[in-house]
Amino acid sequence: MMTILAGKLHPRNRHGGRYDFPRLIQADAELGNYVGVNAHGELSIDFANPHAVKALNRAILKDSYRIQGWDIPPQNLCPSVPGRADYLHYLADLLADKNRGVIPATKTVQVLDIGTGANCIYPLIGASEFGWRFVATDINPAALENAQAILDANPALAQQITLRLQPSAAAILKNMVLADEWFDLTMCNPPFHASLAEARAGTQRKWQNLGKPEGGRTTNPGLNFGGQEAELWCPGGEQSFIQQMIKESAQISTRCFWFSTLVSKAASLPGISAALKQSKVLEHKTIAMSQGQKKSRLIAWTFLNPVQQAAWRKARW
Image 1 (cartoon, rainbow, N blue to C red):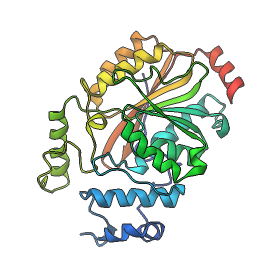
Image 2 (image 1 turned 90 degrees about the vertical axis):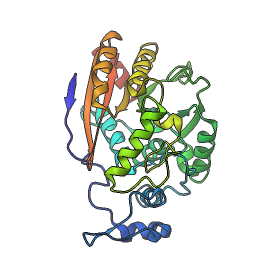
Image 3 (image 1 turned 180 degrees about the vertical axis):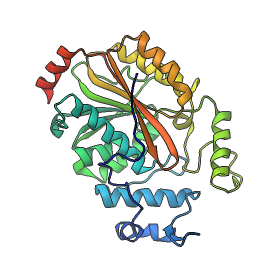
Image 4 (image 1 turned 180 degrees about the horizontal axis):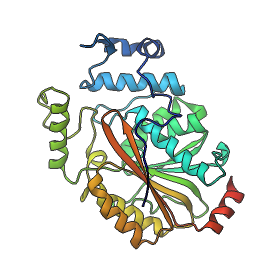
């Protein structure tokens, strides 16, 4: 497996420096309610406060991507915009690597976002940053309803994003690719815990790392950024989920150039590698990612041989 190391945010990522809180407050005044001077004499927020975290990310989306009306229910996962943007930039690199170093013309690129959630974050950033078209899927009708409300507030971006309900909780890619559809990329941020108990243990570790008591939030399996069951855990955890995704991807092997997913746990990699080998993918890459102290990676794979890749490039890019 080819591994590409990346110690910091992607060079194209808009968010590589410190947060410019005065500018962000100008973009969204609500953020000002949560900004103060920390122990180092710098402007910051309390990252253990989910309301502050949501306000920060809403302001970033307004300031950097002109996204209006972004909101999520209190119990849903609040994404970190800089890390989410990084995934998209590395996917753009994968396309450029197969296109003589040039990211393909934006209007031709179509992406399948598996498990878009109530926040719809990848399609929103990807459509704004790259002009890509997205099909965003989820098994939760309420999540898609919230995503649609965000799209309604951003009609220009909404023209590039289609929401699609996955009718089967046992399926990932199945049912989501229509007979006349081809995707240049798929992406996914899978639930990484294997059980509710494991998710709650993760909650406690997160709060301890933040140097704060959990504050009676034991009934909520989410971390400090929130999260519902399907966002945080599934039977077998991320390894089982991704192995199923790889299996399903083999059934539509010529309908997508690069399949991809985030992988949170290094311990999941051997099982994922075995699944890739069993499915006889022709090429796969692992790209290490980092945001502060958080380490992650994405895995991408393709079933297309060089002749098929050249034909794809000529037909679509």
